[in-house]
Amino acid sequence: MRHLIELRTAYFDSSPLGSRALLAVDFAGVPELRMFCRYFIIHVQWYFPEGIDIYFENIGGKMLDAVILNMRFDGRIAACGMISQYNLNQPEGVHNLMHIVYKQIRIQGFVVFKYFHLYSKFLDFVVPLITEGKIFYVEDIVEGLENAPKALIGLFSGSNFGKQVVLVSKK
Picture 1 (cartoon, helix red, strand yellow):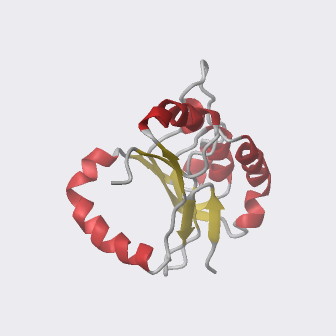
Picture 2 (spheres, one colour; picture 1 turned 90 degrees about the vertical axis):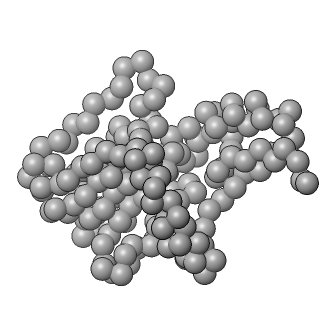
C-alpha cells in the first residue's frame, strides 16, 4: 500500500518497495498546523494502520513520541532537527524509548554538510521528480529587502506557509 501524507510543505510518496514513510517538516510554529499535529498524533494509527517504516525527524517532542509508538519492527528514523524544542527553556523528554529496543528501531542523526559532496547526485535524482510533479513544494514569497525582517519574524510566529522566500529584485 502506498501513502501520501502532507504536513505543511512536505510531500512524500513512499518508495516502490512499499515502505510506509512519514516526512514531517517544521509546522510547530503555525497555530492551525499545531492543531493538525495534535490531531495527527491522536490519529497516527489511522494514517499508518500497519505502522511506519521510515520517519524523517524534524519536529521532536510529542510528535516523536507518537511516531515511536507507531514504528514497525526494524523501522528507521533519520533525525536532522527538532524544531519544537529549539526555543523551550526546558526541552521535553521522549517517553517511549523502550519501543526503540523492543522494535529494534534504528535512529541516526545527521547534518546536511556531511553529505554536501553528494549534492550533484541528489540533483540528478530529484530534479526529474520535481519536473514530473512527483515532488513539489510551496513557497511564501515576500517582495523587497525591506520586508525581510518581517518575513524572518514570520518564520517563528507561523505567519508564513511553505518555504519563506524574500524576493530582493525581479531582475
